[in-house]
Image 1 (cartoon, rainbow, N blue to C red):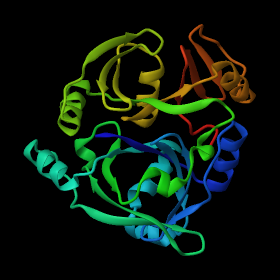
Image 2: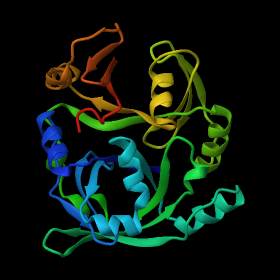
Image 3: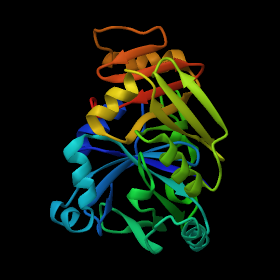
Length: 288
């Protein structure tokens, strides 16, 4: 089990793609999910990616992905994430044994804009009520990462960001959330961390290629403010940079005037944490 990709919801896919280019990301050409009415652009790393996703056919989305529209009614930004696994039937049986409700294993595909099939996959969705803080699903691609996306030349971003480090879920009931995510991941959290910057306690699950952090507020601050405004949802995306100075310089065009914390640089509603070589992005919705 590993992180496959993170979905970032937007009301304007073209505009969001241009903004991501402006802050140093390379993106794939647009793809289309015909059966769901959505379109996407991808930001590729080695084995994982960020997926900018927006509405392409409103009537189809209303019929087949109404939850996506409900999310966009609240905000844009960090939406959900997918876990990779090559035995979805096995995962279905394991999760059922842990009383986690899932869909059946289903097929899907991404189309190129000319109507040809780009690639196919199977997926297994977890009931949103069983995954506090974020919807999630398991995915099994029917072709390799290189076959789908080409050589690593397309995964070199001028901002220096080279992989996803962690996702942090902001939740109101941490005990219930950890109970559910322990069942989904098949393991217990491995450490707890108090974050004075966030005024939160973090419960950290370590997987093959990323950390999943469950954060609960212990005082007024970033987490409590987010929960009050949006409820349980993804609060932070942590990205690794191989050139933090350049990454910070590129992102600085979004810097706003306001109170600065020694551990944070604030960019137009984003919070960029300068922590070793990680860049932590909170609430992407203000810029996309």
